[in-house]
Image (tube, rainbow, N blue to C red; front, side, top):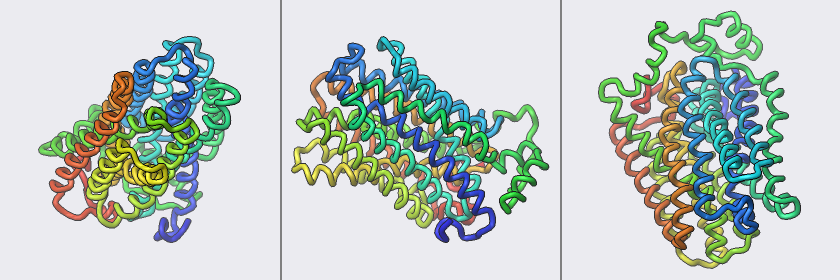
Length: 442
């Protein structure tokens, strides 16, 4: 690993292995998530399965509803059975569900496939974030999470090319068959992905922990305080102890607005751009630029958050996102529109991820997956609402208002996370000094 990611060489091989394997898994997650938005213009044009604009928004919300369920369940399950088992289950689920979409003969069956895929997609992200957080070099947690999430947007870029190169000659079903390919990666994860050292320590599996740490020359994490069997829900309850519920609620509300914005734009960007008069190829170029911006944004935001604090960077990024999304409703020269889409991608995607980074860094290892999972899960209500809202506005021929509504969501997230940052009341240096960053820190 580079020196920027590994201040100490100890455990760096293990960290690199975990980040690499999780990166590939999240790449497939991004492909599966963005593929629907990329092929949607073609499906609407061909009237595939008889889908209308209103139904298309509903179908987009089915996937995000599944992600809500997956995210809420994943944190608690991962803290009980382990990150590795859950990641294997999630990749298997969303791959098989994509196969169901590929063979669907009706809107109902297609919607079921997208819902089941959403459960797997929603469960994978917080689990992968928790996994890399466990192994992140000290003082580089936000940057490591940002590096991981570049994979999500690399998957979005891949989805645009799948739509461009495969859908036109072979049809929309072929794109969903491509999304079954991640099944081949499951045996690789099974063989090479280690379990979280923190989870193993928390479970009292000392021999397994020592063997894994010795194999990769990694440091053993400190054992958590003993928990009774009746305290299984203690990780969740601790989010609301004392006045911590205020901070928890603020981050949940910020996550709601952020994911409404992320998934609303991800689902409808190509279609909204086509409604503005762009050809399908140009509309998919916007998807590529948006996700390229996401890749750049993750690295920039991760580095900045490790230095200045994830809450402050997230609030600033949401403000810039709102401005960029609003500008998309204004007719501009094509070249300028490309620039705005790219910059919007830079700020939008990483603004939401820095909420996760804040919660992850500020949580203890034994409760990290629960804290991140529930923050993600509560935000998924916004992810459900965003695609539905875009569909309703487009069906009513109010596509321009879609950009305005998404911009307002960005403003609301900026406000909530700004209040949360002010309540924190001090600089947060990405967890390098072990600071408790948020109310979810227990």
